[in-house]
Length: 599
Image 1 (cartoon, rainbow, N blue to C red):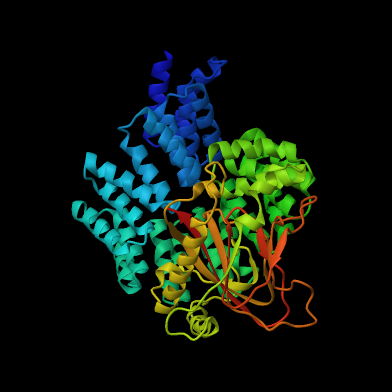
Image 2: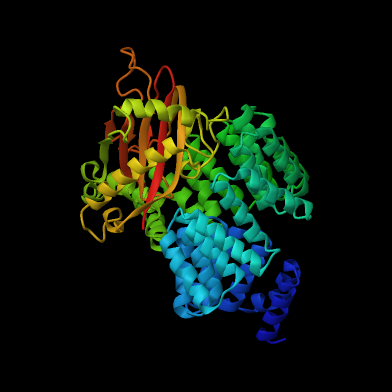
């Protein structure tokens, strides 16, 4: 059989839903070739994706593109794969590459619109969606337009777009889902619940519907019902990683029960021991609940089944780094990297190399990552850490607290005598949104709680007053930044800014934020609503905001500065800048944070 016939037969089997047979059909061509044909590498990537071996799929797509840079479909498929994993920055680059090669590739423009929306770049996304609609009005393009409008806070217009998409195609589940989400954002969660209940009555059991349904119930304070929705979804989709992890996280935040919160996930791993993604998810949740020995045993059991599993070696390397064994982490991550050179493995490996004092080796991965996504805030944090370790003069220019950080003591909105009076009115509005008892497992706070609902979507007049004050302060800060187009922070300055998420944190006595960066922002923030009284017995800088110290100890990288918290104080800084807080001894502390992006 000639190569084209082999490829055609393999594609046919894959399209029929049989990736194993497709791989078998491809084998003669694969085994006969010293230099693998680009089309064969591309096809193997699609097969690996169908087999849920996503890291290998990414690797083969990158290899196919390196061998045949003009293949617009390979660029599109890599973008689609990255988008499905939440890596929207590099996905944008892939979709744009596909469109340069094939400007009429509507699927790539649709993917580009969705990733721009996910990144909070709503105005750009709207332009792409309207370009799609100019070519042809379709339900998919209308839905994409709705998403772009939603990202700009134009939720009523977004709702209209989703409803127009449903007029084109009444059974369009994606548009039904987005309509329900828009209703939630408009404070109409009861109406959203009717949409979700209607989809269930129609026999729709899509995991994404269950996740949003549960969130609508959480918005209404009906936590037990939310848990029940996720439990039903897990029963129907026991190998769905997102549902399993969201159920476990909700149980943790509701009860803090370190044993029961992962019970369903443990059962799924026991019943499907070869499912590496489930096993890695269980290990990560256990680690975040401070059960690191158990987490490592879960991974090592999996490696006994699949000794070359990239995802298990990657997670083991991450856990070793987190548990103070970065040298062992490098070994594990290099095992993972030998199997799949994906974004997350590169990221974990770079961090572990920084931890053992090898910035030059780390820079190999960092520069690759920034080459894929120049505004990736985590890669930028690692870049500046490596520059600092090397003593590079460029570090001072790019990571200068004096020019990159602003502290603003806000004036009160009209009707309040001072900012303390305003915060006294704001605090109970925020307290009412703290409906859970434990910190989220996937966030950086410890010993406290975080609101689940985006504050920009709550519709509370007092919260909206704060957001208006904050946006004005961010605009002033952004407009005063230097005009340096090649600077990773200053160079993103535009005519306006938009929020890309806002939340409140309430820390208990002894609570803190571990050092971190904000992947989805450009400018990030901390605003102090309520603070404990100072205690003379507290250590120096207790409760203070800390800048420049990496998340885990890295040689010669102590904190670069501290900012004293004060009621009514807003701290603005680059999202890539390491930041955290020192613990404090007594009473609670209530803050608001948000990310802003240029528009």
